[in-house]
Length: 456
Image 1 (cartoon, helix red, strand yellow):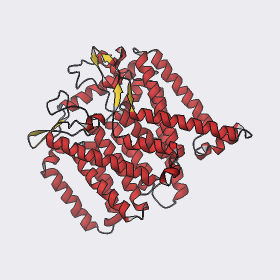
Image 2 (cartoon, rainbow, N blue to C red; image 1 turned 180 degrees about the vertical axis):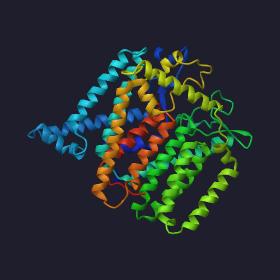
Image 3 (cartoon, helix red, strand yellow; image 1 turned 60 degrees about the horizontal axis):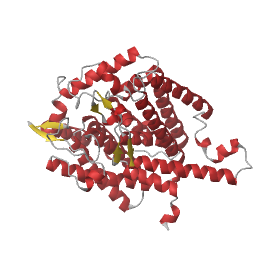
Image 4 (cartoon, one colour; image 1 turned 180 degrees about the horizontal axis):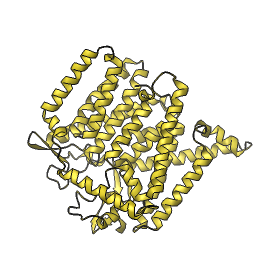
């Protein structure tokens, strides 16, 4: 009976959410994916399982549009758009204006690609951009037709899977291999060049990667997925579902702390603290103060606290980030209108700074705003900021129609989008890595959807 209720498009979308935390794919290594003779993962065209699912989703969606047109040929094009629910967002998002703005942006990006040093890698980046734009739009228009409890359950499965894999990697201080390799786990150990290690209590530990290309990406996935689950718990009356989701949040928090991702951990503590205060402690200020003191004591006296207190500007990771920021600003200065070209940041990087270690230095700038500006110019950055502003406006307008007394800061969409932007201010994976791009597309689509906004 359940299979009969789930249409094929929904099934592909559910599978996409399920496989989002994996990176099973086939890499190709054409000449344009090399920089100074070194092959670069960021530039390599890769066919992921998730790409195939998006393609199948697009094909079935297209067939459904054709089928709809055949059975409704008597209607005008305008009425077809209305029946297809494009009017769901037309009040706050003028489709005609947006089409013009999108066309203008694509023209700017195309000019930037044609003027870039490596046009082929730029066109590959443009193809990926179109893919994720489709996913965002599909999510915005169709997520309300899905069972959101199933979406949260699939995120829970991803968290549980990553938790057990991260635990095994941490205990063994290496990758596990076997079936995990086919789900996207990289092969590594604590001595692998460029691997992410952290010093705790004077001892060096391998930070677990899960099935992600870096511990920070794993941390970002866990943070976003847990925030979604936290926002949905209160809307379910089923005791079993609540137990499953609470268990997921517990082990997800453990996995997040194991990644030692500073920004993600701090944001999660703030979100969780906000939730606890709002739900349980708002009328008990003395207990709240005691809880804060306990957290500060544990954070500052345990080895984990060293991760947050022992930060020096001379640390290698800090120095590399500073150099990348300087290089990105120089790229913007030298290419203010069209940027260096989509996907061309790493191609241009050796011309802007000395690459001492290709395993650590050759990477995108750790800020999505600077990365957008460097690759698409000031015009691209303005459009990006405009779209983010429109997304916040969309959230606030939709919230005001649903609840008149609830502060916007309590809205789960507001919190999830803000969380993603905070992470993006300190990292690049939302624009450069498959799993991050999928997650960011889902977040934006979710924020533009007319699904009921839960309150944390």
